[in-house]
Length: 380
Image 1: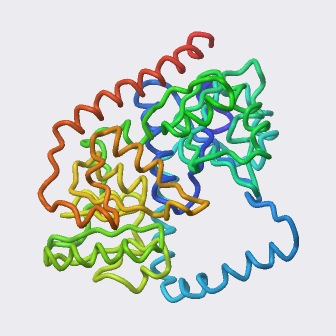
Image 2: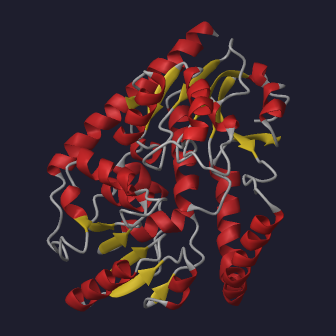
Image 3: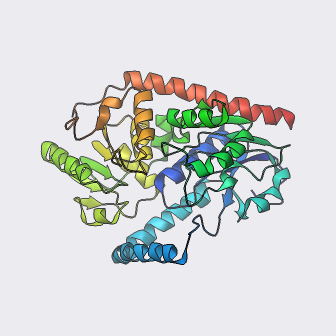
C-alpha cells in the first residue's frame, strides 16, 4: 500500500524479510488469509539496524570472527545463493503486501491512523533473549486507543529469564486480543500475567492443502526422493536419513540451511525460493526435518514425514517443545524420531484423524481472528 491510499487497513508486525522459509511463509500465509477473508491488510516493513545488543567490544568481536568461516564457505556457492536471493525478493515483492520501510516503533506510530488495528505474530517474535527483546513486536508503540491483536506469536524457549519478566508482563498486558502458538507458551504467559491466551495455529496451517499445492513450484526431479531440511547440526539427524536412503533406495535431496549440508546428500537445492521449497515438500516421497515449519507444511500437504529433534534436551536454547506440541495436538506424535524410538514406520501415514483435528483447529483459529478483526472493523 502506498502513502497516498486512504483505505484503513490492518497492519501486521512479524519477522519476514529474511531468506528463511518458515518466517517468509508464515507472514505470507497470515496476510494473504486476512485479505482473502475481506480484511485489507499489509505487513509492516519494520527493519531495525540491528537486533543484537553486545555487552562488550570483545563479545562483538567474537561474534564477527565466528561469522567469517561460514561466510567464506558460502562464497563457493555464491551463484546459487544469488539465485535464492532473487527468488525470495521476487516473492516478497509479488506475494506480500508491504508498507513503506520503518526503522523504529516511533516511526510506525506516526502513521498509526492508517490502521484500524495492529497484529503481532506469528513466528518466535516473543522468544526472550538475554541479549535483546524488541518491544516493537509486542506493539509497544501502538497508542491505547488503537487495537492490538497477538496472533500465534511463539515463545520458543521453555522459560522467561528473570530479568525480562517485568518487561514482558507489562508489554503483554497491553494486548487486547491475546493468542499464542503453543501450550508451553500459554502456560508461561498465564503464570506471568494471570491471563490465559487462546492457543491457535501457525498461519501456514490456516491455508488448506489445495492452497499450498497451487502455491508450490514443481521441482525438476523425476525420480522418488527423500527431502532433507535440517536447521541443526546433530549427527543423528543425518544418520537417520542415510538409513532411510538405504532402506528405500531413494536419493537424498537436501535444502542446505547449515554449511555442513552444502557437501552432503545426493542433490542439493541451495537456490530454492519459498515456492520451490513448498514444491520440494509436495513432491517428496519422504521428508526428514528438524524444522517446525518443515514439519507442519509436511502435515498440511499430508506427506510421509519424520520429525527429528533439533536440540538436546539439556541444551539451554532447546526449542523442541513447539515441535512436540503440534505433533501431539494433531495426533502425530508417533512421527517423532529419537535415538530411543528407532527408525519409524515406512508405511504411508493415515491422515484421517490428523485431518479432522487440523480442520477443527483451523476453524477455531480463524474464528479467533475474525472475532478480533470484526471488533475493530465495527469500531471503524
